[in-house]
Image (cartoon, rainbow, N blue to C red):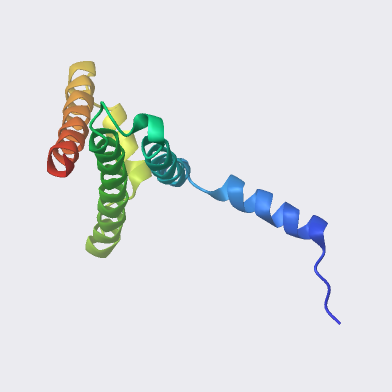
Length: 126
């Protein structure tokens, strides 16, 4: 007869939680926040006076942004492997050879594009 060792199961659960990526934890927290905000706004005291859909739409736009970010990163890595471009460690070495103003410009442009995509998700959902 097979028995379930609770201690072994608990260790596996802890290892699983430690292996989860930061983005996936944030996605889980946003899903929990979605449920909590819905429950909070449906309480009798909160049904009058505020537009209940606005906080939910903000959370939904964050969830959409994270999903699009994960999907684009997955597609990017698959494309990178399929085309046979040099590895990321080689690209980092090339980035380190750039001048300071080139590094700053590249990082600023990357940040601006990520911010623009996040704003686009917020505009589409709301």
